[in-house]
Length: 169
Length: 320
Image (cartoon, rainbow over all chains, first blue to last red; front, side):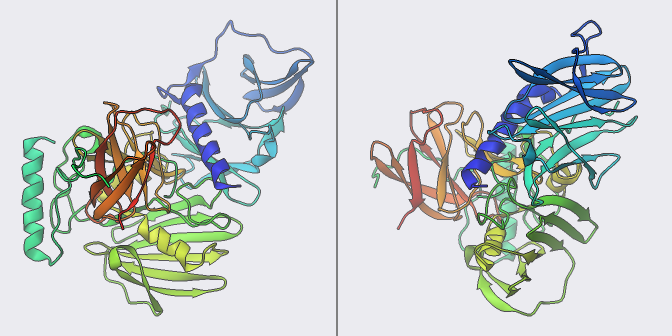
């Protein structure tokens, strides 16, 4: 990756991160009466706490996170890094999406999350779809997130996203 | 800068002058405050914004973090890297594309910061207690100082005993673009910081809350170091439109500041003169002083009533 591209990615990540909900450092409450769960979506991942759905429309695909059966907006893929800290009742989730300017999800080989529970970092594999790589990071009770590394296939840092300041509860 | 702080600075520098034998040094306030002269002639990494404060051994630490005065503290026993080696493009002020931070360890006597990738691992170790010398060849580093380096094809080690600071050992394994020069760049970009700044930079695994770690008040403009050990450290100015890591060449313009009339000249040399060449071909010299004590970087101030979003309004270089 050339230095110019590195610079552009870093600046873009700062801008996107600042505009995505990190500013003010609060967990965004998912609206009880917000959007509906997309119909006929492909389930990318599912746990007891969340589902990640891919809606492939004719006008372009979007990915929707559903936390404890409460859906968030279906988000279209866009270049850069977007981090969305969300809360449903006592459950806190960080949803981070990454793709480069060409809409290539493969820039993210894996993620490493850092927090008060994982002070040395913990690897999480990405969920890839819709031209982006997705991280859905479920917080433990009392866990304070510090940040996320997006790591490329050669082990280098693609980008680091700070989450310091988000409440631990 | 207020009178109390200025008085404290002057007392500190007087105390240090009594104990050290150095070239004439001007305190970091009031120097380089530039009105236009009467006779005009890196690393990582974007940034990241934080202010660097030099800590004088046995003297006063001035940490103008967030514009607040801080009490005197201990010597500069820690370092923060602003430039990191890269297996692909050479030294860079950004960690993006380079080895990622994998660990930060700190005890009463040592700090170790480790970066790793498939092709290159780098560790930066600081020892505040005496350590044995290492064998190797001399190599010139910042400000005319000499370090010891032992390099081979698959890695190596460089030991630099910082003036009025700790012993710094940089070890690397793997491919190093530019050879030993890449490690010398790391030394050039090290900022000596005190305990409080180190704690802020490291307490959350190298992530920070988008705060300025260090600030240098130049009067009409303030330069700060922003970012973190994860993404890299950048130099910028309040309300400025660009953040820069100080990789070669020798200097950059930061700004304009909040008044839109003042620019900071940030240099890879800590004293002397920088020549600024504006787009309209006006050339002027700017006096440079150390960014903070113990830094290989310097700063100066120049006025220019021009704002051009996203484009360079001029260039600078070390005066010949």
